Length: 232
Ligand SMILES: Cc1cc2nc3c(=O)[nH]c(=O)nc-3n(C[C@H](O)[C@H](O)[C@H](O)COP(=O)(O)OP(=O)(O)OC[C@H]3O[C@@H](n4cnc5c(N)ncnc54)[C@H](O)[C@@H]3O)c2cc1C
Image 1 (cartoon, helix red, strand yellow):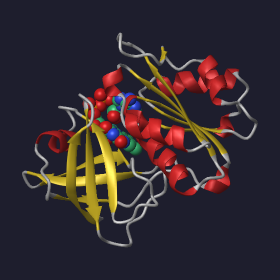
Image 2: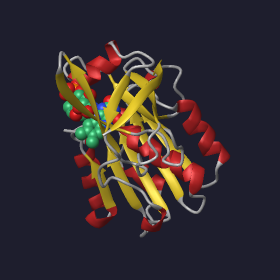
Image 3: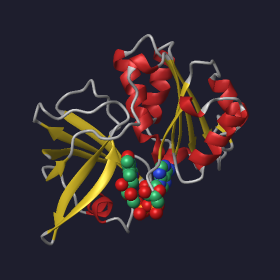
């Protein structure tokens, strides 16, 4: 485990807080899309939570997490209700096979919903930082416009880089939302691009990953080109 110090806590949406942690040990590293175990002690007993990095692995010495509030999960609850700047926690190195590395494909579609966008943002930022030869499309579904995580950055990167695109849809739009509405469907996935070398990364709530996998299968995408992460 590595020692990490909280350096920033920010309410990003009504349900999600962003956490920035300083990790000074140079042995710490992760790949775009990976998660860490975060350990705290409560009343002398250790508790663990798993969280995906939202930052790009190109950034050294610090990581960023985006965490949805939960009153049930002890670590998530502590982070939302008690954690303060300067607190230290223990974290593992990057874990999991939900990763993107340039040699895997030069065409990726990142399909996320809600806070499940977190590992996809790490991949999107990584492509912006270091992989100009890869074309990445983020397909991101949110319940309402105020739950649009990383809105400014996603919009800015999609305008700034020819190889980055985003299709954001809101399931319960309000009068101020002029973008796409509804759940991610086959038409939206087709719009994201269906070339024969595309890799699809799926992360979202239970049901969404199954639904999107089934849609991709019906569009002729083989299972070998679908990579998914489940948090339950
Ligand atoms: C590998 C891994 C990575 C994780 N990364 C994050 C993270 O980056 N940010 C974060 O807030 N939590 C993340 N979690 C979940 C976190 O560790 C806790 O499980 C969660 O805070 C518990 O909340 P809950 O009991 O209210 O979950 P519930 O509301 O009961 O949800 C059940 C499970 O589904 C997951 N879930 C709910 N909504 C979504 C969604 N939109 N997309 C994907 N999964 C969803 C929950 O996190 C939980 O694990 C991750 C879990 C794992 C295993």
